[in-house]
Length: 254
Ligand SMILES: [Zn+2]
Ligand SMILES: [Zn+2]
Image (tube, rainbow, N blue to C red; front, side, top):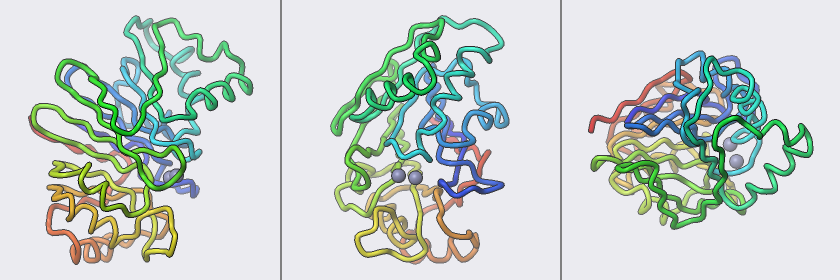
């Protein structure tokens, strides 16, 4: 499995960090995970094979995770270097139809009439979707918005997990159990009472409880001092730690 970080940031305008977006490749699977501001041009900048993407998976409908869907489809419709016939499946939690209808209302339904098979699928916690013959995509609820979910992608005995946006949850550590790579949001320096995101310590604790091998932190609503961040995570988590940056490629050997 190979994951390219297209956006390691949040909704805060940032010269180096796009809003949340990732590109996962394994076998015949090429999946865009979340599609926040900056994702579309980052696909080209970081040489992701976007023209042949097979899946799009959205974790929830905050704009920093889903706001570039319309520009993405404009690119798929008018910006391709070659015609494609491979199908594309857009997956998202409940609310996907509302979002798509809203975009069609705003920009015209023609935008989503692409010249290749395109379908949408509502995903729910507990779902297991076969992305291809040996790649499974699993879904769990996160405490963030009414619809928000996390992902677990399994292939060849390996697992890559993505928190999407979430508050701390013990049950999520079970969903992420023994992940080879956990891509975790890490929004705040300190935990906040009733907060809907993870603090540094909570991201570290979640990875430790999950017994993840590698923790990749992203989605920072604070100025990142990398050495300080790693030290604080290290107090909770003893595995490998990566402070995610746009353009980083995370490889998991089969
Ligand atoms: Zn977010
Ligand atoms: Zn969010």
